[in-house]
Length: 192
Image (cartoon, rainbow, N blue to C red; front, side, top):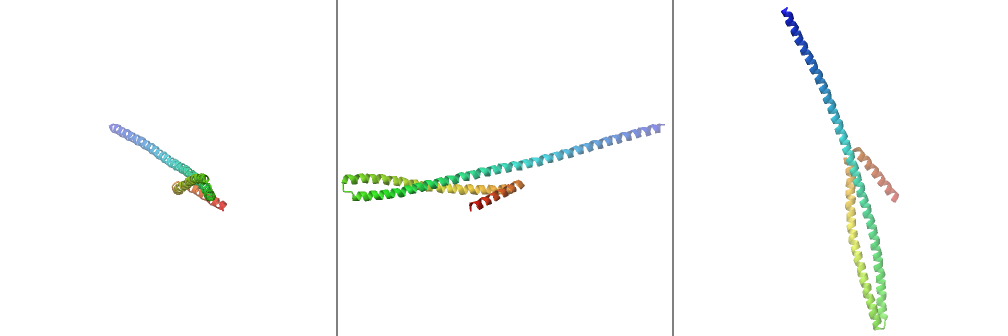
């Protein structure tokens, strides 16, 4: 009987060990599934974060490109206005040359000393205005040179940004670049 008791105890111990092993296996299985789900969730979060960062980079880059393009447009408008001002001043300078030439002819043909002195005073005022006009033309050309350099710099940076968007913003950046190039090509065709 005692063997039976020992056999029963041994059987109970083996049963308890099996249950414990079964419970441990079940716990390890659940823990493994939870870890897998956690890794999958973290991987999905990481992928979503990367997509969001890529989209944000695309949006920020295209916005910066648009602002740079607008700055270039503004500089071009300033250049056009400056060209007009220079042209106006050059026309004024040529008109003043003609007026001054006529005044010298009047002075030489005048007989009266007082009249010659009055004409000379007018000539001096006209020469001063002509000199100021010439200085404005010179300043205009200096400003024009600076604006052209600004425009070249702006255009270069805008072009580099456009290439960076194409190369660094994935498919969305490549599609944007292709649309920009198609639009640019269409504008060139329309201009000619």
